[in-house]
Image (cartoon, rainbow, N blue to C red; front, side, top):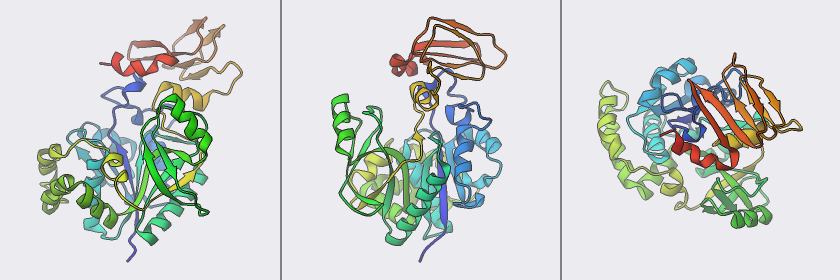
Length: 347
């Protein structure tokens, strides 16, 4: 039996490395990062158009952000916006919504996607997702997306694939974030891809995987099962969800399960995890300056990313490879090479 296709957008992160634009009150997924009139969450929703109907899209977020999600995605059914009482990473998030969906469709095929990534080639993205859904439904296999490696990136996890002539290939191993030397080897080998954190699998496979590799998480949602979809759900979730371990689905399942496949893809992807990643995506002018929200006067300055509120008069002189960002009267000026410290500045 083949069920319908569903999309789950995971939107609970806090985006601390994008401070001060991203704050605990309004993280980056709810912000128009690109200055295009759509937030990252809305852009994520938009690119699934034509893959599933709006009524088959679900969002899992924090209780603190449910109102923001409702306002930004009015086409998503209210009961399909699930509110986590606390952060527990992606494995409990995936289990919660999967237990919900399987009560409606015991053969559902589900795409899980982060809410804060950038995709520039949307038609190719849709082709890859549609093909992955077909593959997963037919074989009841787990498919994850692997992004073509363009540089020796140390901030991403990697996926090694086995040689195969098919477009969707067997996974050899998941690799943790490497050091520079190892990242260089991964790039040169040709059989490593960046782990994009997008997963496609059947709800029956999801349930079996959690029961096999994460029985403690499965147990929590088995106890919740009777109240899912009732007026008692949120109270019970608030009480029992914190019992789940805080663990990513990569650690919990993907690194343990056999017969996982990867779809090597290239559709202009970035996880937009830092100001530097945003700069790399947008820099095109000869001076490599990127300006969002306001057009400052830049004098003898190159390789900078400037994100300022509209209406500000800004003059920058003599800066090279810097982040200059302001929000709510908080100003950040930081070298791009030191951007990993930003999450500490926001505390």
